[in-house]
Image (cartoon, rainbow, N blue to C red; front, top):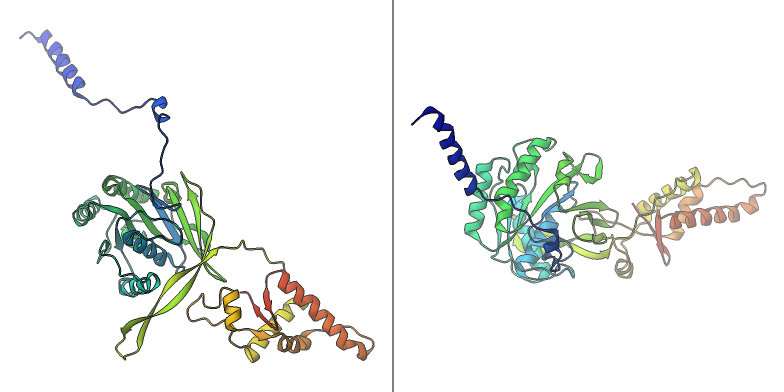
Length: 380
């Protein structure tokens, strides 16, 4: 073989290899509009099949309660508060709260009057979602457990990663491993995360977390309980914020002392009301509002069944008792705090009544207090 023939042979070999390559995939735009695009919902209006989602919230805002409730309904094939579900298996990669998981499931059994489904699988340990080998191990196990897994829940992001949630490169590795190993299972993925430090309305850590999500949701504690909101909906219309209360339920289990155990579930209260910004109070208004605190301390009583039925929030937070007080007792305390200028002492009682009435109306209209019948109470 002559030396000048060698390049010709190499070129022929290269050409042969090039013909074996699979073309990079493209599709014509006209083909994309031939058939209507159908959204396949796992939970209608909330979670889509195959999507990547995030639910964030501060501690004790019910994050894990929401995802466990969703998992319970999906695996049981029942609606979640009028949101239709597609029956599927669910896997929860649990990084915290193992001891409370069984009690929360028992509470959900009481809420829905159903036994927890055998299609719901919960891990006994967290997984490092930054380590590709670890994520592949999880994916292989999930596939062997159930080839029909519709949802994988990672609770929480922090407990299931060895890296730094503020690092865009670590988050990129986290998301990449989900794309490579979990998404091919055909399931939706839901990540539970904490809210930002001092910022209830955004998730903690790198901004690349939110950028990668198809859907993002927040759970925020408020005066009436917990509000669930959709903060990002890439390909669907966001649902209106929903209000929930934590409802305690006794379990048919006893502790070591023979006392009945209790747990909680989320009770749906309907659409959340828009919060109105409260105006700054004057010194007199603040003094009269403070006098309501004194009246509640001295004369506060449990709300009547009628008031509890008409107004939410009294049973929304476990361990907290919201009392009401007769308006006459409030007036009595308020008169001690009101200063009026009257030249004639005979006119002072009327001046006190008018000042109290004006302030009472302002506090009610600005959302600081609630009144019903002869009773009043504070909104915190």
